[in-house]
Image (cartoon, rainbow, N blue to C red; front, side, top):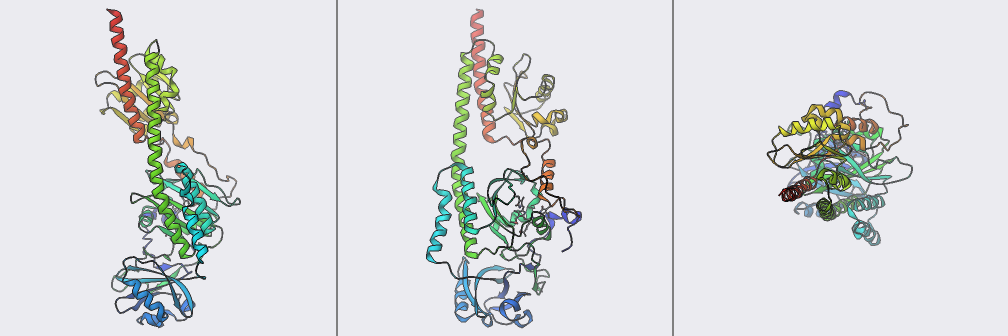
Length: 507
Ligand code: BLA
């Protein structure tokens, strides 16, 4: 395989990965027309698996390949709306058959299979499938249990749960691995590692197995469909061959086999359960289905657990805010000094690293903030911005260039303005996220050289990710913004009471 060049890398998003015109060599593909069941396209490796070369099969009826009883099974499956896996006999051996339709052909993929699962094995599998759901343990505990269950089901050397962020970069949030494998837990990777068309495909087809990352692909015969002038669309084919760029990425990671199971939330790709093995690993079709079911169960449970943890978080913030307002009402002295005594509460309600209060007098700074002078200048700029109640950004430096100087403490800004007339604000700051993430891999590991290789190395990939998030904080969630609004309302109330008390004492 020729090395991947920088030019290939810049084409990443445009590579038509469903039209590469090849399959992985661990099975055979037969495409036939209906209802005549005549073979129209086959993979080039039929002789090895079925004893007849492609030219001897094309134009022939499928009945010449499949055992009669298997043909009956297949015909029945063709009339069903959902196509599962079929145990089929051909050329004197058993295969797992996977059936789907593409480009007006029925596509049958055959994978060699070992003996059927025993009833005990099948029940053991169900136990494993349900094991992550058994304990209520919060979203991260659930994902950790899911990684462990997939590893137990498949025997992969490393199983990770990879969660996408809003900008499609991702983070490894749970991991179960053989001790000899590098750990990736906590590492972030750029969005380009899994390009948009691959993510789209994983949304529709939720399991992807690369059984041998070093194996050469097998071509299809004919390579181009005469009616369409392009290769057969392999979007739905389990055997679909792999982009050479991704194969190089896997090689650089020392991965011999990989499997990814999509985790969807509300029909959207939330993350992947990503599995690695040092050597080739042919995960049987039944085990793959079990993993797919597990991932769907986990995603349902995750939605429930996340709802619970969001409401717990909202309750916690509401509690902090009540305490804060109580303290402010109790405490004598000016409001800013009362607020600065409650710095932890004030930062806690929005999850900020620092805050500034501009209530008319000199700014009061709490936690990690820009300098007083910078804060005054920032407030003057904010006073000229039109916003309704709150203003927030993860990249202040882009909107307000002087802020690039203090991106380390204030890449993120969440601001509330107390009223429309006076420029009084509460500002919350968040640091640049790149500073809050650490590389957990082995920095001594040699980086592979060659064109493209440096960007396709997970270590370099991490550096690239750090580049893309320079000047950005972690995002403000709707809960953070709601908490800021809530605090603004409470603060305005406290200010009013102070003003009334002041007016009374002056009478
Ligand atoms: C696919 N890239 C993937 C997949 C993963 C990753 C999980 C799914 C297929 C699989 O399971 O192997 C990326 N794997 C990771 C990441 C981690 C991991 C981030 O283990 C972190 C721990 N890849 C690149 C670049 C390109 C690229 C620069 O790094 C540009 C061409 C392409 N990645 C690429 C393509 C696929 C892919 C084309 C689709 C492969 C396919 O399904 O055919």
